[in-house]
Amino acid sequence: MGRRVSLSFVKKNSFNTREESPVLFSHLRGEELGEQADVYMEDLVAEIRNAYASKEYTSMKASPLARLEPSRVMIDFIRWLTKDEKRIDSDLYLCKDEEEGDNSDNGHITVYLEGEGLNASYRITGECIMNDDNEFNEQAMNAMQELCLPEDEAERMLEDFIY
Image 1 (cartoon, rainbow, N blue to C red):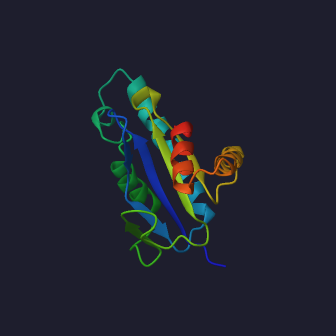
Image 2: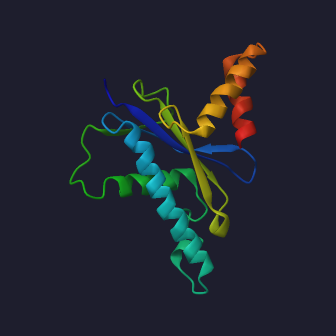
């Protein structure tokens, strides 16, 4: 069995529209990519909150990372993910959306970014991240489909509800 998976960062912007980063695909990391994203996000959120809690000016206070801009977070996540690698070979690649690449083994992981500065937070959902949220998401999705809603409409409603 392969370990193909994809991951993206998503945030609702100030105009209440969805911003999504390009999608990162991995052929080798599988569920580990979600775990790595969790560690990265814990560190990033802690760094952002510490910078804002400090009375001194730091470059983090004015950065797109502190605003949790999805595309900027993706770039920094890739930097963090590959910091010990000499070259990025065939494991990782970027696509415009999750349909463009191959995540057939472990599906797609979404990291929802919320707030900024002292209010920065995140949560992770995905097919290979088994937790209470996913169990709820699956139950909610099944209930909406039983109401004869098309799958894409049910997914959109669930996403709006979760946000």
